[in-house]
Amino acid sequence: MSADTKNRETVRDAVATLFASALVGDGKPCAEVANCQKSKITTTPLVMVMSAGSSRTQKGIGTSKYNNVFFLEVHTLIRDSDDTGLTDQQREDLLDLIDKEISDTVADNETNAAWDRLTFAGGKSRSGQGERSKATKVTWDGKAYLFEVHQLEVIAND
Image (tube, rainbow, N blue to C red):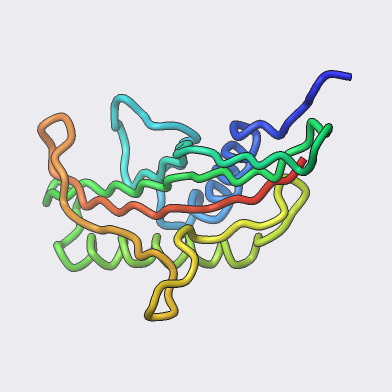
């Protein structure tokens, strides 16, 4: 019998679909959620869900089943320009709102059919907190963006 381990792509796509439901649409903060890194940014706010590595531990001797941990990066980009029609404060507030909605979505979907556990990566530090997201400004294709990275850990056992 040949092995049939979990596919990180399936999990990444499912997480991106959840974020799209929570973040895109009337009255929601994002214009787009992508299930990959986009080579060209055409609209913002944009959230991209990308693969960031795997850890697979065989469940036992003689088995083709694994305890899988998939790592995903969630990138948020908001065009940082007066051309957006938003003030500096409104753009920063929007970044904070998207952060909150990502957190709510993770908390509301800790388990489902595609995974055993969805959480922010990093475990517990000395302060009792998981790994923090990183927010900064970046330049992409000559344009300035507010940029935030969240790291997720998804346990999806075979």
